[in-house]
Image (cartoon, rainbow, N blue to C red; front, side):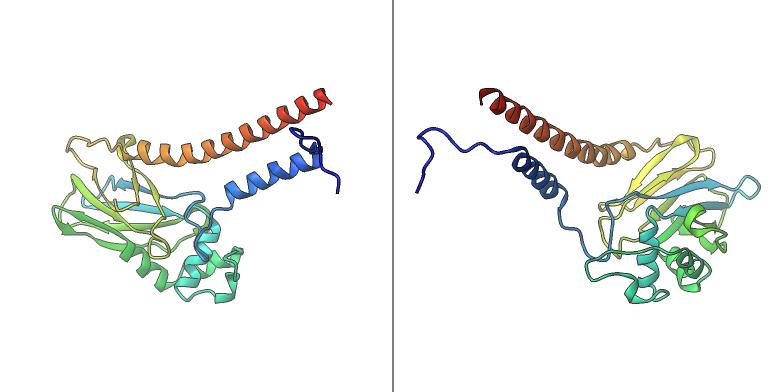
Length: 238
């Protein structure tokens, strides 16, 4: 059997180097995700605003992040068939999903359960407006509080019953922002004459998410660059 001289290794061709890069990329991005839930895609959002003519009313608009999440919710609520979710967790959104979920009483009940508003320690009664285009513009809820509001406590747990990793990016009056999720599902919002609290947890949570994605891309790019330089050096020696 032929053995290469001591201290020398057989050179890998371009195809072999490319295979290493592909394997690295696949390993990096192949972290397991829970089947039937996709909480690490585009985040869902809520917008909180007072009613200009009715000081006791608070408006909350919710919008799904990924349309496949809307399909998952429809399946969980029993509004869409189970076979819309594949055995490997893949989900295929159809335009009919939004028109099925949007006007459903089950969806309205779910919104009112997962999104709550309280003023002065007293709950505000919610009323869901029939969505015009649930997939693109989301759903709106009007909350009527016992008295004119100054600061309200808004709780958001949308989709966290499907997977606790779901987060929600929230915006309010005066540019105030917050992130719901990771055990922080309640936030106080200034809607009246009370001084603004200036929520700051949006920057911290969003920065972590962005850093993870950018950092992963940089690691892959650096690995590919190092392999490319190594291959060029071997060619030069040969």
